[in-house]
Image (cartoon, rainbow over all chains, first blue to last red; front, side, top):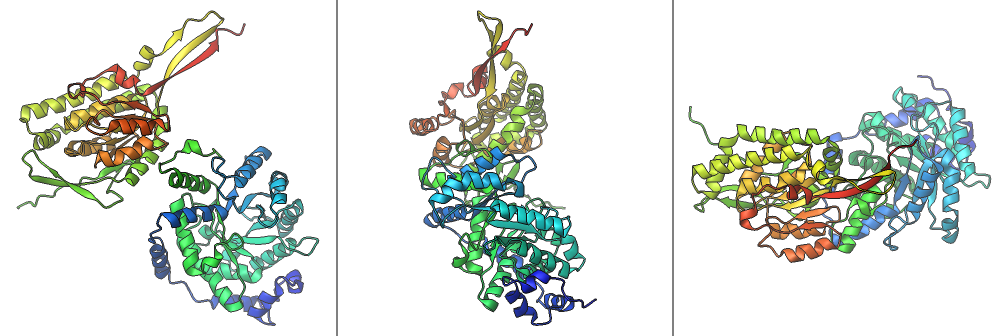
Length: 343
Length: 286
């Protein structure tokens, strides 16, 4: 293995990343050193992890807690539409739903964010402008997927342009994908460079940064060990959030994978005192499943993480199921699909 | 070689699979002489809810099947039932008594009921629909459509024929059903689920629950995703309350039948679970 310097000019000069980087790799940030560090991370006990996740799925949630959980889930949802057929009208209706998920019940909270393709950001900004102006500080964020989502197969320049355009259009958050091909063939430095470069591209003119969510696409990384390494790699390279999946690959988010990533986040917090967010995305379709994720978060990193800036659900159909459950709890009878919107 | 008897576990039939109640409950079923026969799953409201979800998702495929195809599938239920008549005769005899000849007669009647309704699948619409007279250059057509998801409370007796007489007419037009089987005699209906499972009927189109109708039916009556409730076997329940609660979500309610009418076959039973849609269409564009 070559021990060339990691080719990241920007991050090393960049105040946002340098501290993490130097803390772990010291003053010798070579490729070999990064590789040595990642391969030195303890391997995952797969049986133990799955057993722990299964145990966390059996917690019994009683009705008052359940109602609170449902509201919490809504507050943590990144309401998502990532289709080739997305239109400005679709984005407007998504934004309307994000603001008021259940028009029949004004006590329903709004979602955390809408998540759209980069070219749809202006329509999302437009649709949410008035609402966000009215409630400064508790606004609905706009997340854009970038870096040749979902495959990530494009040149670094194209990925950077993809990102800067989305940020310039008003995206508050960038959901980037890692280059799984590079990761699987062992080019950790390349993955690191790309994440760091995208982090740099998240910088706004006023020196603030758009929140960077790094999608590992766990369904393509094959092993728990890979996911653990990729989680650390992403955190080291400057991720504000680590996210399981694009939703375009099966399997998408699973509870063991999410638990594993939460453990990485917990360990990072214990090491540095810095809080990284986690976003399971794709495949979480009903409230029961989502509540298991809440339990897993609360029992792994603590209830403090159950806030929109530290935990999100990437979902589209989940919201309707939560609304149906919520209606059931409020009215006392089962609701039906005619009582929520068709997305 | 001696053979040890392997008794059957009678389970619910939800979404094309045989499941135990999510509540873990069961109840004992006795034969005509009050001797224990089997433990049967006792469905809870959550099983009913799961069954409604299954019925709702099966609705598009079953109602979307051509009328000819629905007729063939219902006919196939009769075919498979014919091949297993001995099993059903034995189960009816055990549950209801009354002699083998009567039990055999009930199985025959059940098979004939499926065939009778199968025949209607591609014909009832011609009888119920209409081209309405109008004084303009267009057609005005009334056509029938299935009501949607229908919950059925099956009669207690006759255990097999009552079940078929309640469910077959609902299925003909493309409705999907959630049915609560006879509480004292559920075994023939639960065995019929094995017939349904091999009959090409889409999974979820028929869901069979065993349990206490008085406990489950209020949840079905108030459920907003159910379009009609067939109270054919609910005569001894407080069905006025069910009717009132069904009204909250504008459900069609079909009241209980008198005991001697339970097994009668009629076109009205099919039409009770259809809606009439009237459309107009130009006669020509020239």
